[in-house]
Image (cartoon, rainbow, N blue to C red; front, side):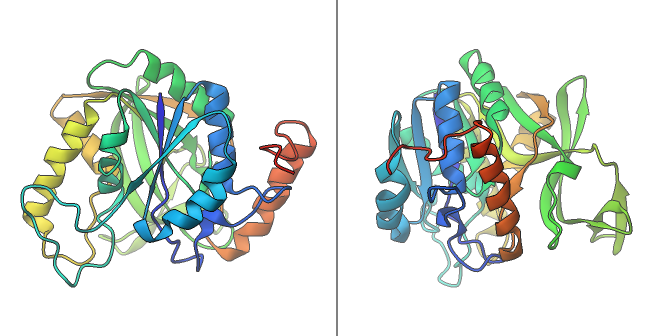
Amino acid sequence: MTLVIMAAGMGSRYGGLKQIDPIGPSGEFIVDYSVYDAIKAGFTKIVFVIKKENEEIFRQTVGSRIKGIKVAYAFQDVNDLPNSYVCPETRVKPWGTGHAVLCARNEVDGGFAVINADDFYGRESFELLAKHIKNAEKGSYCMIGYNVSNTITENGTVSRGVCEVNGGKLSDVVERKKIQRMDGEIKYFDEECDTWVSIPENAVVSMNCWGFAKDFFDELESGFSDFLRENIDTEKNEYFLPFVVQAQMKRGDCTVDVFTTSGKWYGVTYKEDRQSVVDSIRKMAESGEYPLDLWGNK
């Protein structure tokens, strides 16, 4: 089983390459804990999707110290386009998470999972992903769902895919770019209505934690061509992973099992988030959930 880790983003709100900002007791990054948990769950290969210009620093930091699993790299490049499409010179922004995963297609041989590099998901998530992927057939996917109350920060808004789940299956997902706690409630900003809307504390949201069968790459590639047909000249529109899944669901070509976890998300969306993540990771290490020195390199 392969774990694809999307790590090409620079973290504009955070102000730096937050994927390799030390947060663990022995200098570990958030992504180290995801890799460690993935190994425990039975994954045998990691593919980091990064920018080519960040390859050396990734190899010297994350790649050089990971033990017990094969590590590969794929590169997200705005010029990596199908069907003779040519990226406009004015386009700098990456094409989105759907494109990021597509860039890993040559490094994945079977069922695979996808996560963000800068989010802490918890061990249960990887165990659930692994169990599903081992038995996944064509069009059989899964998503790890989190209670929205466990995925917000006190330091600003977050973007989440708010999900509708029926009978344990995903039926809809809507990207909300601004979610935060305000006036004692969790709310998202509805851009169409220009107002804040309350959502339940236990509303299920996506954190880009997915499990797919190998055939999903075919869907990604054909969907990306469709996207480019309408958006090749845009500077900001992105090909988002949840949109690809949703389109396939609406055609009846896939089902998505939603496995909800009570685990708490940790991430550094803003610089002010960092210390709370550092403190939480240390508590888990001191309690024995993780080694104080994750890879035993010190």
